[in-house]
Every structure is written in structure tokens, then in C-alpha cells.
Amino acid sequence: MRWMRHLFLDDLAVRRAFPRHALEAIGRAIAEQEKRHRGELRFVVEGGLPLGPLLAGRTAHERAIEVFSRLRIWDTEDNAGVLVYLLLADRRVEIVADRGIHAKVGSAAWDAICGEMQAAFAQGRFEEGAALGIHAISDLLAAHFPPGEENPNELPDAPVVL
Image 1 (cartoon, rainbow, N blue to C red):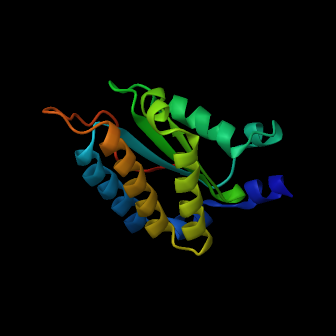
Image 2: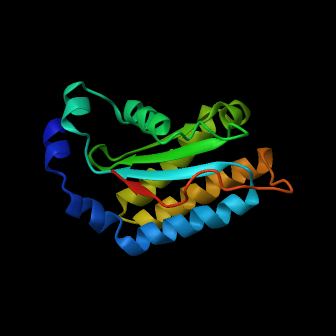
Image 3: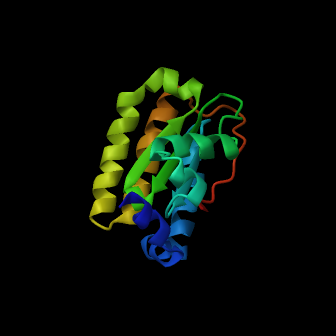
């Protein structure tokens, strides 16, 4: 059953959940929130897994770690990069955080944010759920990595649709 959801969830379903205006709003929210801290946020939406990872039985968490690495979110000066990964076919939100912020925050905080986002997404409130998560993550990053005199934008702010 899982493989059918992944293979038949098309780009149109992703675009219905995250139309262009919603993706642009998410990018703006990331840019605005990153002014509050030295961390870096990336937001990635994937409709369904590609055939190879799907046949290998990859979970949403395993795929999120792969995307975290591929987008080089770990490559920030303070090791404070955070990925929000949404796998629509599995209705899963995963947060992968670099070691600098994860050591200060821990898994329980990320799990709570994922739960809040998944609840909003389950109600069809995709843009609102994304904004909620971005703000909550930024609160944690601001508490542990406040902005310095220089606060370069090390990673792109625009969401990625795979």
C-alpha cells in the first residue's frame, strides 16, 4: 500500500498543498526568522520517494537525513543548520538538526514541533503549519545562537520541492 501512495502521488498534489504563493511565503518567513539568530533553516517538501529509496524501504527519517546531507545543511559555521522535511505520501514531518543546535535542544523539542506541524497539515493548513514550525525552530535557535555583529545567510531561504 505504501508504494502505491508514493508512486501515484503526483506533482499536482504537492502543488495543491504548497502552491507558488505558499512556497514564496515560506521563503520569506525563513529569511525574516533567520535575522533573529545565527542558525540556518531549510524547508523541503517531497511528494513521494523515488523508486530506489522506496524499494529499499527507506523511512521518512532516513530520507530526511539523506536530504540534510545532500543540501549541505551541516555546513554552517555554528553547526546550527536545521532541516524541516515533509514527505507527503507518508504524511510525515521530520526535523534534522546539526550537532551544534541538537546538543542544546534534544529530540523531544524537535518531536513536539513535528507534532504541531503534522496536526496543522492534517487539517489542510499547510502554509500555516510551515510558518508555525519555522517560528518554533527559530525561537530555539534564537535562545542558543543569538545573532552577532555579522549574521551571514549561509544557506538559501527558498523552500525546495523534490
